[in-house]
Image 1 (cartoon, rainbow, N blue to C red):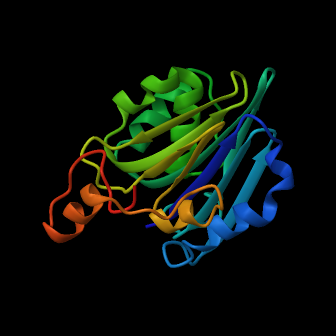
Image 2 (cartoon, helix red, strand yellow):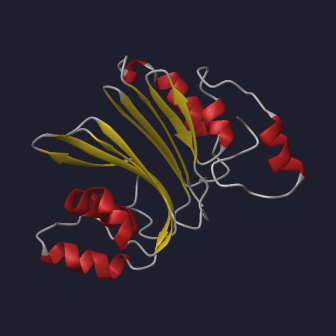
Image 3 (cartoon, one colour):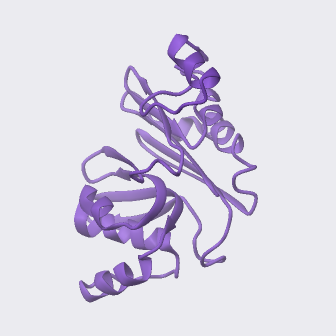
Length: 198
């Protein structure tokens, strides 16, 4: 299952916010009992709870790639069914792999194709990439929304997580429910772009 979370704040250095990132990450311990990881650099912080399925020793997250122009970091939840084929294609383009995980294939795919990596993925997934080369966050979820992904805009960035409780563990997020949220809860429907929490 796995759980991802993160925080981008362009007005502060999130390396000083380890306690908050830990709290956000720990809210998802039931989604990932096998491992946990956090990463922070400048305005970006990522957290991950892992349920190990593929490449048990090698798929630790957040997963990073150092480039000459900045670090690219990824948190990923899900499964990419065609990762073996994509891995072969990326290896043919000169990428070197250190794990057997589909997570590394998604990371290397982002390095090769940027945001367009999503067009090549067949699977169920939600992930976020901090691209330190451009100081930008890319958030992607599978087209059917099988893997949950919640986000909360802040005045200087965004909070996100696999579950609302990861976002709400950050004091910047207001725990507010409005009428649209109650409709989501009581009418048993899922409206794209809406959740119980505002």
